[in-house]
Image: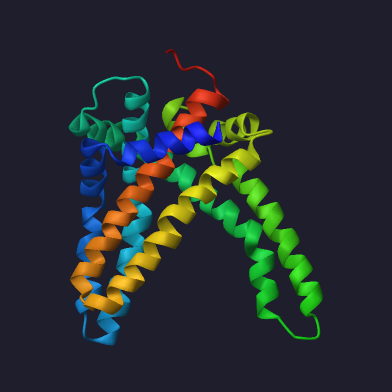
Length: 245
């Protein structure tokens, strides 16, 4: 499961049509990054940052749904009509996917809230207890995260209702948490670690905010393809076992 899902995700990023589609979906973020990088006044930068976070929260379901639908069609070897995908995303999926993401983020925040609160009362004297509590909270949080992580996929790929998507994710992820975790970690190593190391290196060399913003959008586009395609593949191929060859 792990090797096939990872390979499917990596292979998908080399598909020219899929990459351009993902890049097109991420272009609105470039507008905010350019304005933020060239903002001179401090209060203006803060305003752009706040507006960017709100936009990110509202726009993410469109990227997520569009790429998951594209992956589904690719898995079934059907023609990917990108204009139709975006239309279906906004008309038929957006509200449910937005609500699922909202609940997912809220649950994750509550799970890691103890660690956040502990950090506020950090002291050298209680360092050992703090570390133990942090590790326990992290392990518990990661486990819960991957048990409910597939809820947005269930909403799109199986048209589950908001509440049903979480119970369904909990059901089909049973016994697969480690596998899902490894697929996710591999993607983060490939794109976040190596990608941001590359951005940091080129930032030092070129010192061009526009170039850095474009590079960040490209890496984000590739990362989104990998994550959404590899997990869609896992969901359909292994967790549900409904793929017809």
